[in-house]
Length: 303
Image: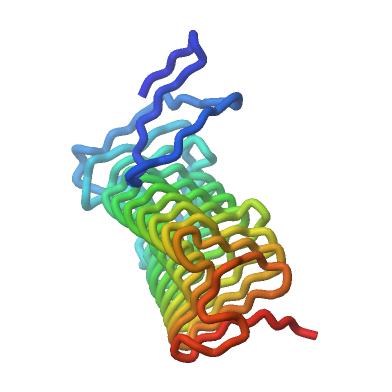
């Protein structure tokens, strides 16, 4: 909201919806101020609607709106071919209903910074496939990212933070994969998987922490994979909760710390496999013991 060049200081409006948001200092680095703002608040249409084989190359611009029913970038399922949105780190989206609304089709998105949407930041459904590198989503009125009905989001180096609902919600056969992704300080569950959906959370800098409820909730036949050195820690309730025939796999060097409650909890035929080298303290049921309506947490490794 202000640039004080003489004192090397900028003022930033905090759009995070969390009751409290961690502060801190940035001692170095480069700040880029966008000189161009396009305001769609008075428009009765979506910002950019992609047609057949749509391609949008956009740089150094802030795209804002106060609309609660229009989307900044919209791809309809009837559009043919790959849709390409090249935002390249210098595009900020503030306001709107959804920043990216993807129904069917395939879209590549270089980098995009999303804040303060009325509903979801990224909404993908009906078999939509999005590859979004360096995606930042914060302060959304509902979920940071919502995937439904056989959709997929590949979001390496993403940051999903400070949203009112879930950080990432994955349902009904959808997939969410990230390498070095961060899901932090959302008001509800960090990562929610249900209905035969899958997620791979990989990379030594990957973490799910500080969320208001569970770090990861895996249910209804869903599968979650946490790779070497990734961390799920200091969430408001369970670190990982696995229920209703869902499966969780924790590899070596993984750290799970549930903060106020249980690190690993399985109920209703949920299965958690925590191989040697995974770090955790409290479990329910006790490891290698069937309990909680047929649930099991296994520490056995293949030989």
